[in-house]
Image (cartoon, rainbow, N blue to C red; front, side):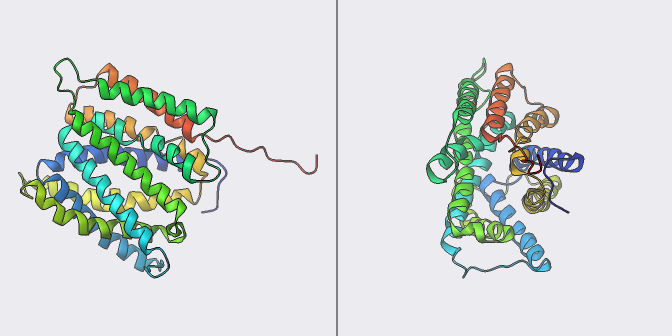
Length: 303
């Protein structure tokens, strides 16, 4: 498809579906945790997704190489990827999907802070600072809410969600400041999946038995993560990024945590407090401000 200068109906539909899938993914991980130990589940997901993405890359003739100067950066981001998903999968074993969706998708907040120091042209301006302040207020508000019974969310799980989102931001920043940005999207993902497989599967031995109460649905849900979320979702996102402006796409970023909260109520019957809804609104508004870039006016040379 040709490059577009704005999000049209097709692009908007794809981004909404993508946000729905990512929001649903939080529910799927939590349900599969009942059948498969969290860290082992994360390792299996990386292992199977590696072969799916590798097969796709070979079929599409994408360059796959570790001798192009990207190896060290690839290993580093792969380690961050491993830590990120240790935090995420354990967090979903401890806290609710609704709370995790809010903390996990605070990634743009940490990305903006890191980019201010590491990337030229990404300095914080008044608009971004306002967005950071609004998002931080939402995060603190959500984190401080323990409910009347003190059991609305485990604070350790909440903290793991935040730390995982920081690792996610670290991956994005690492790619942008290293040679890894010159590698194909498939190669970047293969680094992450290969390293995380090597790290997560042995590391899972520290967290108890691999199998809990495994049911057939857990196997299918793991397959959903492998094919639809990790392989398909990631590749579709970057395909859309080649067609539509990144600044316009970023405006859809608030939808994913919103869908996560909605699906947690719809499928898991989680109680959604006014605090969670208020924090979601604040964080979403902050993310929109952080990501929003006004379009440059088109000059008319004939005027």
